[in-house]
Image 1 (cartoon, rainbow, N blue to C red):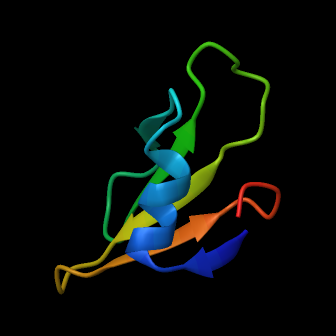
Image 2: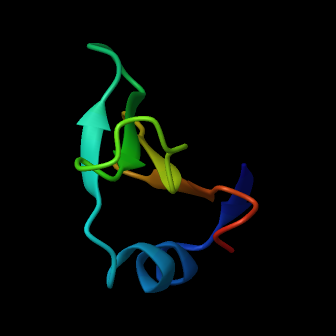
Length: 64
């Protein structure tokens, strides 16, 4: 996955039927953005929420 801006992330993820799945229970929270109806497909992207209120966004290389 490659790091992208918030705008680029939501431009790629927004029109798709994907949902975030939180993968851990501590900071930084990590969400994998996946197709719920296609459980074996790789996640489209990943977002991380940090304790300072910022977020980091990543897209799968094929989606960017």
